[in-house]
Length: 70
Length: 494
Image (cartoon, rainbow over all chains, first blue to last red; front, side, top):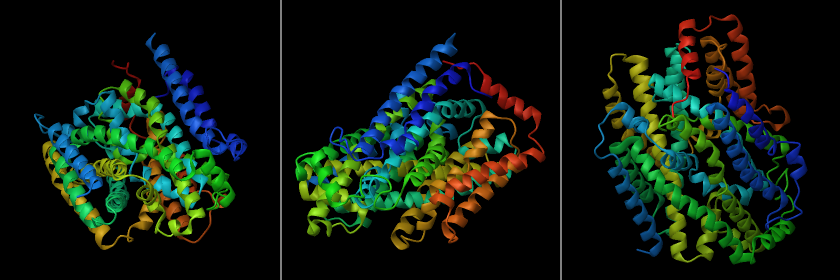
């Protein structure tokens, strides 16, 4: 019932994705300046992390499939 | 008829025709009707999930929140990532169990896993109770979008009747397959609308996004950092993001959609690309801020916004040509109808399958369940429309706790899939304690510690109760556990 070997390896990526949205990271990102892409920093950071989540999840997927296929 | 309305209703007609066509030449059965014969590939499954997830809130609520309360809306960006990370592990297992055990609904799993008819009926009833106000909200949202986009030429009640006659027709005829194909169209126009709007409005009023934010920061210094204008700080943000992220897949309609994917791989791949769709929320949020800045500069403009949810469409009408408003109106209507149609089908499914067949009429055959469910489609739609018309605020308190309410299924589901420990008594008492705590803190006049979400407190108590009660009550029959263990450790079929 537990996780497969590949899923256990993939956990780290998903952990990083969630961490980027949680304190203390949020406390650090909670500021207006610098503006990035026209957005105040907190809004930029959260949007950026959504994209990073996509990258991390793709890595998680590749890791999972690669490990469990063998 | 204006160009705006021509686009919106043209879109509605196209959607309905596609929805009807989707169900042609299919043999009518329970699995076909409720979970599209478990046949959706990646594209159809992705757009179905995206369109069901992003409701009229993605158009009205996001912008309205940014406009009236401020930056705490970023919790919506955070919870998606949490939800999709969890789905990476949870989704493929739900899909597999559905296939091996022939589940077509969320309570099907809980009832079977814990060998409890009572639990199945309880979860089905709680699900229906929280679906109705959510559906009512979507109905009112769709009416508001058309009314605003038409500049008041069409009343919201007329818009609701037209839209929901269309939805009932394709859901009645084609079931989840109809929803899947219409959602494919809905997702495309939603995406288009959400992305284009953000830059258009800021550019029109302020020449660019950054100058808009700089103006806003001067006018409303509390709007862009936590705690924001509404007073929502880091604790509020963190607990809300976690609660929503964990509860996300507990919505009965989203859980049920997972059964419709043709393989586990499709589900897992879908989890990895769902964050991309979430990026479309950013421009809508920016628009909400742009409206706040504009309203701060120009009180006469601000006075036109009677409710925060109207913020985006008031700005669009003020600044954009009719065809742009029409496309965005169609996008907003699409977001609302795609979520509503799934809610309608799910309420019908829960009632026919889990309350009637499993709860009280064990001799009912599956085909009768499908037929009864189909008859319930117009019934549930009519109930929700009646609430919207006759008593629009009656269910508001249920809506406030809807998300937190269904999140109370989380411990029973997650522990039931990944561990052997929880017992029937543990899970049932956990849900009851979680719901009781939620209602107590929400409506009892007692504040939660640290301004945490009441549902979050309920969830923690729920987990504790499941673990404690399970330690001394009768465990699930070993042969049943073995059946689940075997199904969950099977080689993945490709």
